[in-house]
Length: 341
Image 1 (cartoon, helix red, strand yellow):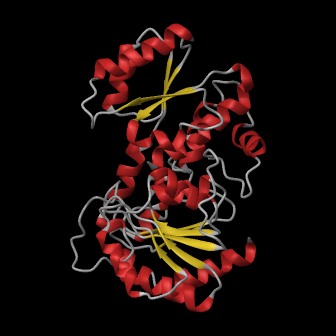
Image 2 (spheres, rainbow, N blue to C red; image 1 turned 180 degrees about the vertical axis):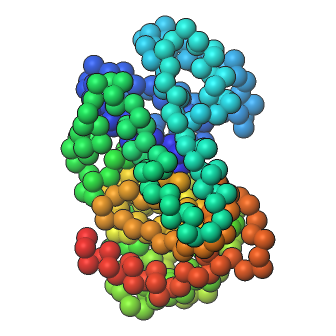
């Protein structure tokens, strides 16, 4: 989900560069379609629904139909997986560009155990700049463009200089000013302790005038702990919203605080300041927030990053990379963001 949101920066760049004459078609899984099916920079979204039993030939038929109506001049593979390789090979006569996902650099960073060694790897040294800038920086010379990132920001005119964008959605009708807390993540090791999120929510309610909204999926049962807080200013929507409904809620929020996950990327695409908490993964992987008003927290430990995705279970009995980030530190960082926004 996060990857799809981040690649809207590439959509905006291409649109700002080539204008209305460009026809853009985006191919993605059906589960992510609601993220971009109304994106202002896209002309068409083609989906592939594996979960419903849709076969590969059905996807090819959809693309063939689109190609007949509007011949495809260029394929840009933004994912770099075996599936996208297979798709490219199905149209091997069409010119193609493949985005460099910096997998080798991320692998190398996970193997350099020791804080001193990892400090040698500057954000840009191995091409580990933010993901939203990578494709633009890599491809801009091929399009004879020298203002890629800067021109895209001017084209976007986002409130916090964000490069990503999503379609506007109806008001969530929550009412008043509210903050979103997003305690979930794709892997358990990437989650800041739920009790820390609970304590943070209580602190927000006691010390600010904001409402606190909890967003999480139907499987994130651990979020039921928020029901302990008996407050009219807490709204626990775990498992109660669709993706598009969650997007609408995020788009109207004042802040979003969460883990290294897609929810934070969605919020930032709407120009919402986000605070991202990194545990076993590393901000240098390129998935840190990129907006001028956003921030992240990450502790330097000799053992992190332990894997490129955060899926690896910690070998210690305590997840120090997460538990060393205190509620007070998160709250004070949030306050500093409020002063600047």
